[in-house]
Image (cartoon, rainbow, N blue to C red; front, side, top):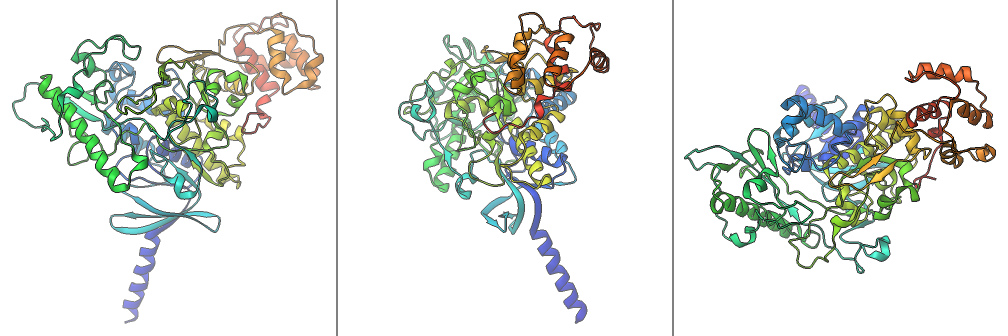
Length: 609
């Protein structure tokens, strides 16, 4: 009898242990942002759990089938750069993933999931797949989230909660203020914004993966004609006259090669008379949304039927790429969702003229893609030529990830605090990977330093990201392999030396020009904001020299000699011979100012002040 009682009690406590968990950081959503956040936080020593509703990690990268990277090819920042390197290793190099003309990096979604899963295999990172979260509440200074998995009810408590869902699902549940749809010109100050705001979101896409099987006679992978099939809606898929977006798509093979993947597979995510689909999900009930998503999937099925039958590509068959019964992705590709109201609100003006503001000093992620919106399938959407809004590459301020008035709650996907217009570039995969990585760093430091996420040191977050080879500033000509990468990033984020932004085609740029020389006036001007004592230091248009660096240090009563500077010069392996009058370039100047003066150690607030 006692043995039976003991076993019963033991079983009860064992089941209780499995049904409840406590971690430092809980992330809802294992998409691009959530996975990146989890990896960063876990690597920094926090205990982390992800609740993911599908069987895969990666979200839009994998589960939604959008496995052609948009942007940041020249900015391999942090976890994005690491992920890309692993794709290179798997497929055999950069050329082997440059298979389609939409991107430099294309891959099979199943391969992307496998790589992310391996990257996320960390002892202090727990991943719960097929999890459906329920009630979210605050309980004794911790977050408590109930969820269901395999028919069983469980819950997790955490210090920091991160919303990494595809559409900002948690924002209304936790009482965070948010924006939705197109902001008005009065709210953002953006010249291109509509006069009256609305709640219209971008078209979504149910992507698909086809495979070229050659001349097989069997019918596997040939899709049925949907009941609501209308071939006329796809009729212009192979033809786009002029138009900056794609040039002139002159034939159907060129259209299909847009998303050609390795191993003779094709990503079907085509905006021009293709499978974009408008769903007004914010206005729909859960049941109505589910029905609308099924219609979106049928619309893609209709496009595939059109490709196979009307266009004659019977060699292209629906590939069983995903662990789904019908062969389609597990989730649709959402380009837009709810956007939190954060400590900082990033608008187009900040991107267009970064040095007119100081938000760039708080940068935690970078992007270079143009502002690209999809509204073709919603006839009621205001006509805005988004693609004509020209911006250089940019930094995302840390305050965009921190909801205003919320303690220990962060966002880590497309739900950051940006305008609707800016969302057209910050929504892309490598940018979201960077956003997630930064969110993970903020969460980990909040836990490790025992402070609220609103009080975490911006400079400590930025340095943690630099330690992971992530970019703060989008300097395309100074890669992480450059010996001066960290110094230049810190000097750039301190405002000492500015970059030069260029709106350029489909990969905007910001150049640092590390080989250019620096004038005394330029360097003094960059330092004055932090060091007003330099006001009386003479500065001409002559090039900065070691002697001028010594003059700066002595003006700040940080007395050094030329011999001291020479020692640092040798230690940092500066290539040119040392002399007191040798002209310094921006790389060497950055190294010396960073090491000697360290302006980066000066804290800034969310506005970069």
